[in-house]
Image 1 (cartoon, rainbow, N blue to C red):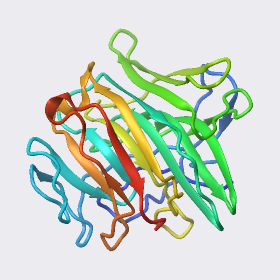
Image 2: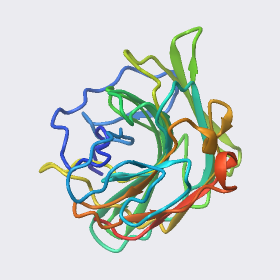
Image 3: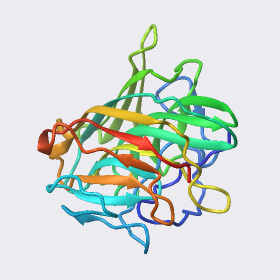
Image 4: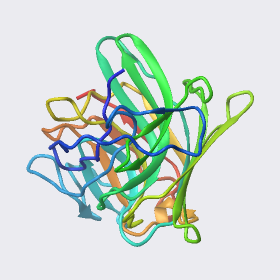
Length: 287
């Protein structure tokens, strides 16, 4: 299936026009290179054109209010939570791969953890996706170290199906100046783990994210239709070894279309406050 995951466009309804080049060979086996910018992942930019909301510390965006200690943002292709200030060396979370409901046409959805990308020009991330090819749901595991192209893990070596439980982490090594991206399917028999080590020039480690995403971009610009994934539940979300709720600059992100209408909803972190490690994203509309 044809799909492109470019830099994420949080609160910005424009397309990055430069195609990604194929990335270097990975230490992991069973990889399928993305086609010049096609694959999984993306990056967020905290910009807000009229009609798509804005980042407000401790206040409502489009009528949504979460908790007083966090900011809120609307994005055209991200939803979830991000620590957006400070320096990050690790992020991790657990989720159950949701089932894609497919009726016609092509839709796309990814679920991942990552460092960078909210306000920087690189992103290091790994996760899963479910795409609709007409009435058929297709599932994949992938990683990306933007600006290199995303890479799919071979579905034969690393199978993904609805209901599988995944643990994912991205960890920066100060000793080696690289990132270790780890994705484990705890439901397969036997369990599988994909571990990839990448080096990313100019990585700032300025954010940490746990995200559901609609990929971009179409050939004519814009975000691709979002697969009806029902609800995805994230848990055990951590940043820098602490509960995600305690992350500096914590921001709740809701996915919207170009008119500011919700494409999904994002729950509050539980438990509430700085000990929060769990939340859910629920699909509302494809585009």
